[in-house]
Length: 437
Image (cartoon, rainbow, N blue to C red; front, side, top):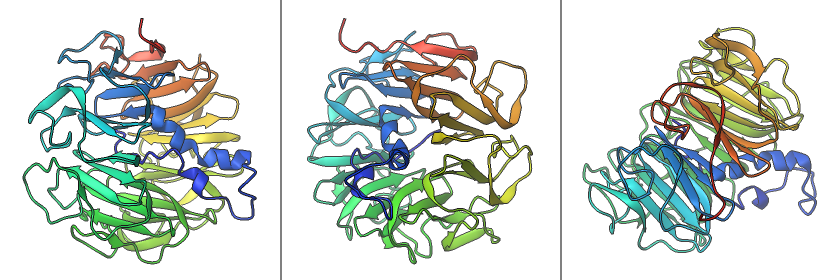
């Protein structure tokens, strides 16, 4: 599941590349803004969300907790419009709940409310329609973990609600629902946040990184517990990436640093767990990072992709299925503008609008052949003009330059949105009307 991506429209505009005049954005800087473009797509465990051209939200897939927000609990045969929402600019999907950030700075939530992740005004079990999360105004960024949520206010404060089993809300752990957004103490000047299963991270405007919540694999660095702690030794950070058991950040100088679980080399260093950040050696001039399922990807400013970590499905794209503890270039890829790591599949979007995949192909995520894995990149047939991509656990979403969306791969939860539960080996048009019929 693609969980808890930080969403902030202006995030990349706040920092210029070293040695580049910030008044003249280059193509390389636009690559670094790939993450902010993905706020048009969000994928939970079994459901998908997309923004319409008019700021409405469309949803499809599993609806067991009413996470599609169309007022029903059924499984629709095609994408449905989330009721009562317009003017939306960012989306986030938790395990089985959804969030939307509107242009007016308010946050709206729907789906499962088992841990209070929808806020205090929502029904206790679940809600099939969005409701505003009270107490949140002037919000500029949102993120979701498994069943908790984070929001950044324009004044740089962070607010959290939902599950707090391991202190992921920034206060002492408890086993009850926490529906009321509460300010995370000790944080100020925050510009964006990221979250994964049970831990949370925040990036301050001074380039420092702070973390709190679960620390079973060292995700909090050398700190621990429910109170935010600064990750030591990190400055000039401009982006965050929270994977389930490790974290990656990118600094202004294009270097990549990581900490947490390293049993499969996803931090590119020797020890199994790193409680303090370590620079990923042999990698420079990065403009984007993506981490998932015990492996890491980085996009360099020269348009090449580098990978390291777990590789049993060939998801490193180096022609082997051997775990690798040092970064190496993905074979045969250049002019890449965006990357996405989901499940055991890795994706790359090229400047010409084509999509290339490597790794798991068991649900035809890469092509419609019978080959189960691809250790080197293969172009996705029948697809062009793509402007942004998102890889889920076993399915793929893409938005095209004409504003339409495509989906393919596993459809066990109707992630594709056409009501046919079988694997979709070719991209299917996701009918997302731009306005009400």
